[in-house]
Every structure is written in structure tokens, then in C-alpha cells.
Amino acid sequence: MIEDLNKLLADLNVFYRKLQNYHWNIKGMDFFIMHEKLEEYYNEVNEQIDEIAEHILILNGQPLGTMKDYLETTKIIEAKNEKITSEQIFKELIKDFKQLLVDSKEIKKQADSDEDYETSTMIDEYISNYGKKIWMISQMLG
Picture 1: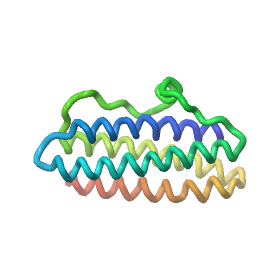
Picture 2: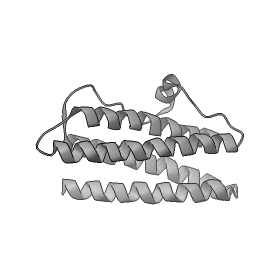
Picture 3: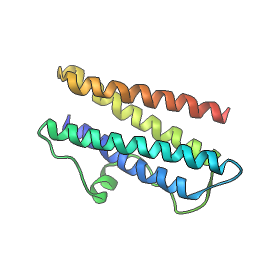
């Protein structure tokens, strides 16, 4: 369980940085809207990072805490330091939210198997959240 939670933690940390990078580098007519939406997303992810790390500690584990650890563990691909349009961002966000959803479902399955109801309940919200974001962003792409 600790290993799976640390994988999610790594993905969330790299995703957080990616969202901030996009926030700084978004270009186009929808700049103001996207700039705010990306800030909303990275603030939410930051809360999830803290919740997962603290939950790992509650389970007597050690959360990963360095960028080196995150980059060696993550399945999320970092953003480049370059200007980017919202359409490009949306495509990346769908891939990343799908990865976070896969991570969360793996944790949920293991937690239920282990009768770890606290982890299972916490992850339910993540599964719902990521699924909704995938749907909403997909609507933007048509």
C-alpha cells in the first residue's frame, strides 16, 4: 500500500509542477480563463499531495519527498519550458488525469482487499474527481 501511495504521490508532485508550468506558459485568446483554471487545478493537487503524504505517515510509511524520487517513480511526463496553447494542454491533462485515475483505482482495489477502509474511503473521492475532470476536459475538445 505504501509503495502504491508513493507512486501516486510522485505522479501528483510532477503533475503539480506541470500544471504550474502550463499556468506560466499558456498563450492564446483564452489565456485569462485557462490561467485561472490551471491555478485552480494545481491548488487542488497541492492539497492532495499533502493528504497522501500524511496518509502514508499514518500508515507508518515514509512518503517520498525529493524531486529525484518523484522523477524516478512517476509515470507523468514533465512539461517543457515553452509557450503552449490550451488545446495542447487539454490533451496532456486528459492523459495525466487518466494516469492518476489508474493509480487511484489500483490503490482502491488493494485497500479493499486489505480491508483498509480509511484508505479506500479517501481514494473514492480521487476516483470521482479524476473521472469528472476527464469528462469535462474531453467536452472542451469536442
